[in-house]
Length: 450
Image (cartoon, rainbow, N blue to C red):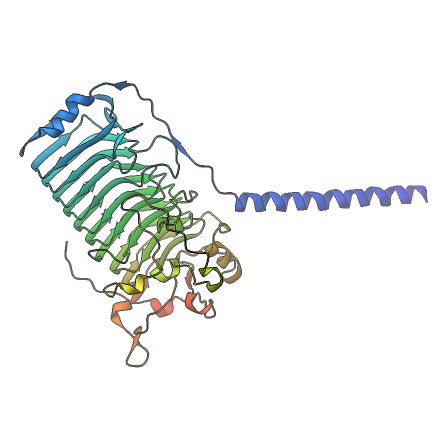
């Protein structure tokens, strides 16, 4: 009898230990799933030399048809370097490892280098670091080449970093090649309201958005590696801007492991991007995404969405509290705009989107649960992370002549292998959530314009 009681107690203790072990293992798994990745750092060795005055003078006195040669060395600046209204200018360093322009502790100006109203401009072979705002901003310029430039913020990535590493806006005939963008709190390589653009052979990492094409047309994005950002490639149209984009082709890119915690400025459009987003195509037209390798994202490999999905729902109870003035965002950083419908020229819906011949993979077996999409996959998608998701929020004129889809809003998905596809029906509480891709197996014909 004594032996039986002892054995019973031992077995009871063993069961308790096993139960506690299982609970501990489940708790550890939950912690690892919910835990955001630690924030990375970029810490190059620097030994600064004093060349501020002669380099400033070279910018100030530059005439048309000038070549500004920057010597090898690491140089610290207290103010922006500015070029305006010049033609046929070459700004050249000795290499991104050799010529470093640092704006750490900048006292005057927001940008590191600010260039405007120029024609036939080449800037190449240097690093630009730690501007208070954007590292390199080029506006209202034509025939621009940005080549072999590393644009970065040093130290641990932070919301205090500048918004854009490479920031051309309102430009025409633009080439960005062989560059690196690191640590931007909005977008690493950004192209805004520009026309006839090529973005090729670049690397973007440790940014909120790796590469972003916003309200730009005739854009080619290819042969880039985009990784360790919050979101990899963003192709957006936003309201209340001077122009709207269409005709974007993204191909032969490697877009992977973009699972970084979002450190964007609160209230900005990119601050709403869930970590673990590979590609987001939003509210734009005539986009082809093909022959890319897109893999290892904890929320979604690629998505097609309307602007509406990022606009918070109206809450009448909280409306009275919202009398505070919006926090001022850095110049160029866009708010999420609830009043987008007041822009009568803007379409909030994507259309003529063709995703084909891509390779999708994912080593992650459980979605990130620190965003609503990850939770949706748990409850609606069998915990699977989609390779392609479409919010399926349709405009009023989505159907014409009965059930025929308006060609303006056509979305086609073809030859991407065995993918997990999700059509969300997001406007109707996901009631018609579906994994059926057959309705979207079609083709979009594009005219060649580049």
